[in-house]
Picture 1: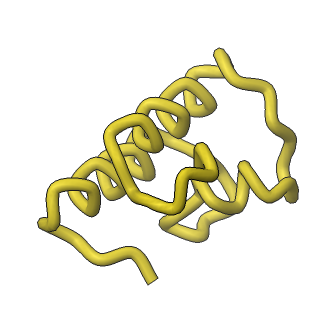
Picture 2: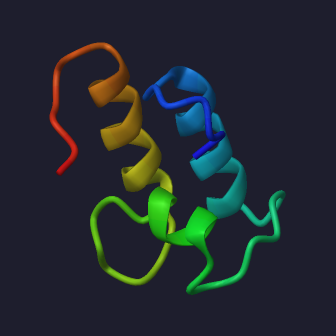
Length: 62
């Protein structure tokens, strides 16, 4: 999400900020699609949870 090539807590933070409308990237943008890891066409807290779990090695994002 933050273009550093790694999945980190920072990526989860960006997804969570988008979920509560503190970030404004629009549907269909690269950032939105990267945050929508559940592929349900919305960015929600569940996406941030998956990203955070991936950051600590508890989940894999395809």
